[in-house]
Image (cartoon, rainbow, N blue to C red):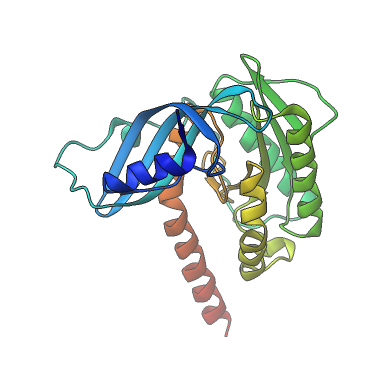
Length: 262
């Protein structure tokens, strides 16, 4: 057995500079690399990790890590995971990027995340503790919805932190938001500030913040951590690569719209 700190050092000695998202003194009993992607100097690892949690119990979790590497990638075919569709069935796209009000935005979020979870084999179960609760083979996914990343969203995120303290790390927890909230009164720079301010706290508590594309409900982007389920990690590994492009395109289109009105 090794500690997380020792494993991180071992990876570094092999030319892979990543860190497990666990406390450095946490004892790891076994680690398995499920998937590795190298793109230039960037490396992404999908790991199955068996470790001793804060209560002294042995648990297994699927973790996503990314960092830098000095290993040169051999030329090979594009990984099959990139070629796979995001979901087995797709929802129709929206015609406009704006939302008329918060209620309609939250209804859209509810539809998007429910469809994704059900597509991955989860079932909706009524539970008053969270806005939505899904379950698959005993693993739950607690979800709150927020139309805007504001103080109300902070409270909803804190509710998820309390749920994790109650139910433990064997479940997933996520705050679902629109990717762009300017039509609801929150500028993009304030969205970014909210994520920057709260990212470390939420990631430490394994709370995901997931942004649904305003036009395409089939694309949901992770703003903090990934869920601990292999199918979701592969899904988010794909949408993560798309997020910066979508965000940059949105900023460019917004600038063009403002210039046309000037």
